[in-house]
Length: 191
Image 1 (cartoon, rainbow, N blue to C red):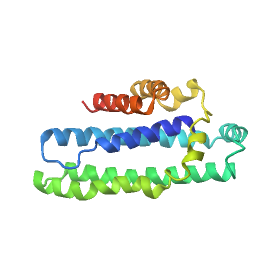
Image 2: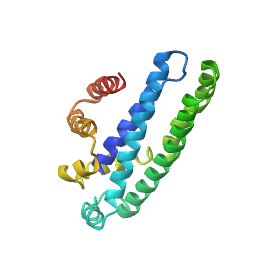
Image 3: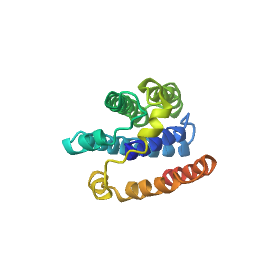
Image 4: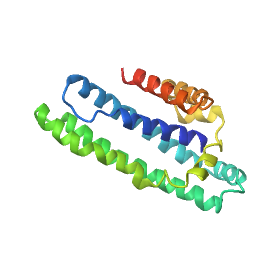
């Protein structure tokens, strides 16, 4: 769960960097880069979720039972359902945004369509319910079911593995320091 939430955090951060309009060439570049990152993180998250569905990982999750989280197994099941919904919606949104970028429309028309489509991406997070029950979510964030060698098989891209290690370092910082480091990290990915 710990690593899943690391990538959910990354997705949410990337969503903040998606340009609101496509007025300049730089906006177009950042839009493409953002969409590619969203796709990569969505793919990694799907693989991590599928990895949890193996009998061994389900058993490990069951053993990680946290007494002060009511209805532990139901809660974990609900999180996976919400994650699946979130990823499904993001997939639809990224396809729409890619179609806008690849269309033969004028830059003004693209920008207008883009501006209308962007709020839907934020709504996917709200509609998923992943922000509900924040206290339980904090507890789930600390449940690690994957060993590093298992993560390396799931997350094949070296850049994203290094990013996961950085995420562990970020977690030890204060909230303000984390925000600054996250901003720097994602600015470097979008360059």
